[in-house]
Length: 302
Image (cartoon, one colour):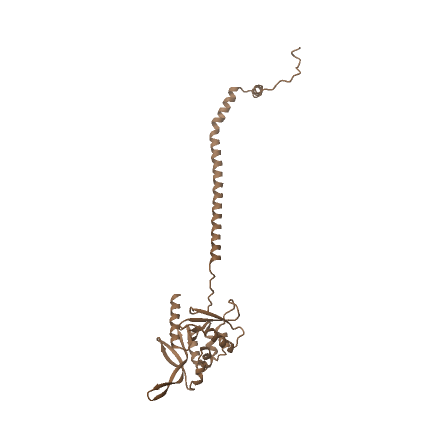
């Protein structure tokens, strides 16, 4: 067979042959290839290390950011849950009406949105009928049936009473006032916006004050035996100037020679100014003293 003739069998490709072809094409030797590879390996460790450090830093940074995010989210969720727990388990805060000038032992609310003088006096008498001795009951007056209904203001209260108080006196009162009873003794406390106007107005009201206020204080029956010449007079209660209207009634006492009658003065109305900012109206000097003491304590505790 002619050696120049091509064999019908294809030449088998081997790794050694590929290396020989590469050396032939690139005009390189095994020694140069080995030197190039060694140089590459000597130069690469620092780059590899820097790359690995950079990659680790990135992973650490993102891991830290993610951890902080979940920690903050967990703290916020725990705080929100704690706040909701406190809100749901806390007892409801009692709503204190602004007319509560003295802390009472009990309170009763009356709706006077459509009440007349007679209806109010009847409801008020029922509201204070069972107050224990020494206990204070606040009668809250509102223009509506709910706890959110507006409080009755002083001018509206005097209108319901059909009072003959001078207009200048009513204007000297603030809208806030408190009515109630200390034991069996009713009282009325009014905040003042002008002491000078209130003082002069009370003096002008005195001739008509008894029929206006006595039914509220439960001393209306005493008006039937009051002399026509009876007027308010000055008395001192706990070093306070007090104006008082008395009714002279006849008391019967037993003696060895029989029974004797003697006149006895019974207060119908007492009023006094407390620190020139508050007016107190009641029918009992002891009640007046206690109210002044409790107002003093309330003032010191604020």
